[in-house]
Image (cartoon, rainbow, N blue to C red; front, side, top):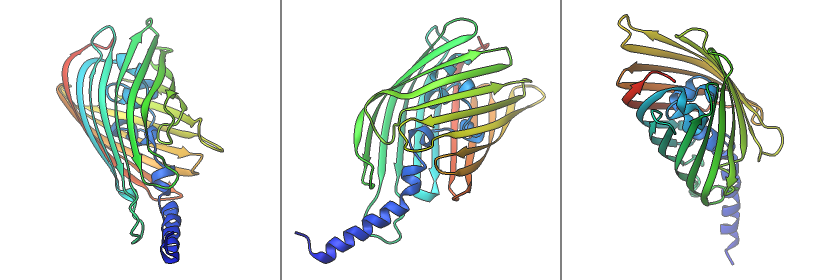
Length: 305
């Protein structure tokens, strides 16, 4: 039996951990933790136009929207819980079955206001996405991942295993795409890998301007669920057309948390390399800040199919 003082100290630490770990447990899971700067900058709304590494986390059916070989590395930081995200990927959409290999690492260590109790979460994820053009309008895709999740947070359990995503992108017109995606539909159950359904709409009225709106619903959450976001990307090209500067703005609202966020992003892109930075700032019911950046290197690139 533990001494009474130690029992009281443990109970106090557990209560404090539950209160202070809310951003790490409620505000973050694989649906939002692993997002890159392009999707973050547009209000997490790229499911109908998820190309390259964005297809890994948003919609595997987005890969064939471009025809290119691209290697990407990214890093994100969230000061509220010292969250760090590292992501690397290699995607090839120049062949008959476009696909990506990737690895993501997420770590979270929230402050506990001087408590001696250590609280942390670490997740390693590695996987493969594959897609296929069905016809001139319809693309389908799937993703399989292996994850290893370790946590000392209250209400969060260690887990490891395999899970599957499935998505589709439909080109309604030459200007408008729609998408539907299912996340973690089959496999190991985990708080950090909830079953979810997402949808997206993307419109590109001009070559320079793209507008997107997305929604995702956590099927494993208790009570109301829904994360709705939208944004704009305007691509500023140099006179020679060899270098461009994407500017992104967006907003999103999480129903379960009753939280609203504003997002923004900037980039620099050439024919061989691209640098993107994105940020998400909570403006209602909290002040969470996420900053993320990525660097892309392009191999062979063809005209879009």
